[in-house]
Length: 345
Image (tube, rainbow, N blue to C red; front, side):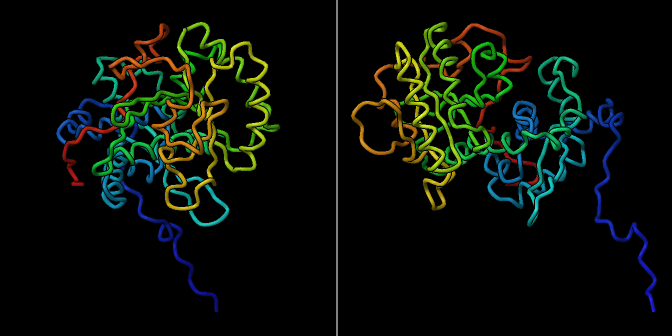
């Protein structure tokens, strides 16, 4: 005997009630949110605008002390349409939830900076459309590099701090005529500070020599700006790192002045323990360096090269170069404001 099937609606999981797009940007809804949003909530909306998509794990690394506390707050922000979310398909297990900026979050962000939402060049369909982007895994990988540094910055008694983090989009608005790095960062530890461009390689660029072709653009950038900035290259495996280093050595060796492009590489599988994803540990192998043995920590890389442009006291990197503002909004601070959250830590 065939049992009576359950109605389809009974098989669905609970979906939180969310206002329509029109309601979410109405004055009444935004006025109600004013009493509930914390400085950290607004900062998270700014981060999602800058970096497009962050996973639950990355958001926890950035601003919460536990996954549970983060999930509780993210659910509430999703209900209010400050943020939206999706879960990509994976062949085994389940992917983490991915978060993007939603319409109420974009409106709040615009009003906070005395702008119209149209000035942000934001569209919800484009924001959530990253779920289908062929570059989603690459974007998540780049963001994971920087959120790991923020997590280290937030550890008790940590001596290091990520003071700047630019997205690929912001870098492109400054340098796209010459180079298009996957990100820009700045790390301060004790009395030293290092800035760098990030090239994040997942092993999909074949052959390895394709990465080396970008050296010419970085050389031209250093010549045109007078600023010598290290390029850090993150690779998926030590095997890939070996082949890329050979191609890089050949490309740099053909330059009239190799010191214009300080390079260092590492691979994701170089460290097998819990610190394998930590960019700050001793994992970086410079190319054409001084006589400094072994792999170096991120804070030690400034010892590896003779020529690196000195950094100003202010961490505001945009003041060092002339060019567009990188968007209507300045980049958000990588470290969130340390204010209590409405849902607790």
